Length: 348
Image 1: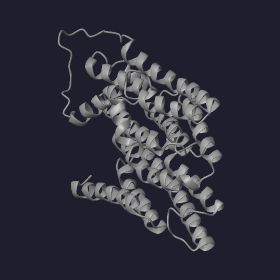
Image 2: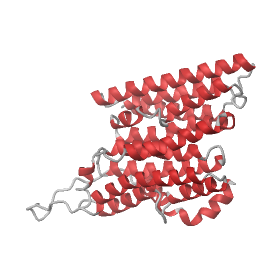
Image 3: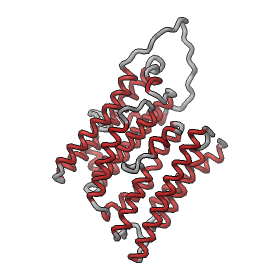
């Protein structure tokens, strides 16, 4: 892709998200979401591969549907109440429509069906943008409208997402589909605590972004898109595979890694709100996700690939990719748990 075009598209992505962040009017927020969608579509279709084009069309249709629902809900609310302000979403029909449209935008269950299929058709870099940056603008709106949404609806979306995110990833062999189901499960954790402690939702979103960035960049560095490719990677880059395995365990929420922090604090908050059953279901759903992360770790670090190379010096292509962002995100993914009290002091 032409570098000038790339700069314009990435700037538009940034502009769309910033516009949604800064807006208090529904039309401006909707405009930001649309700029976001239109800016990522050329990035998704740049490979000119049938799968990439198919994924782009699916993504466009789902995002257009969600945008139309948001516009309809905002118009309905303005018609009923005379208010276009995002915080004044007082009509129950409008608030339900908005949360379902935003759930469709970020891929919350039961509106998640597009996400694994779309992510599977994209390159790892575009998949990374879709899994991280594209979640920010809808989440900004979800946090703003959460006080007006029915708590039972939010809890249902959260529980269903964690369960489906865990179950869906169990029999997958494609890494991008596994990361898509991982994304669905993490979104569920963020939504379930939103009505009680929005600052924990932001903390979970921040840690999810760093952990997912580490996973995507590690797979990109080793050019892996399937589990069986990972099983051959240890011999080439043992250090990278060791840190990738730890990053995946962090995504699963194992202590003493960063991923344990949001899960621990969310379960603690649910227990404080006297919701032991919800907390138990969430913890058990996390075990489902942990299984497929452990499956990846087993393939990466605990299997020995057949060493049938006859020559003394096996051929290796030199890797020219920049590793600075990967190194930073890996450090954050693995080592933030000890400073949990400091992070809590900052966000509360």
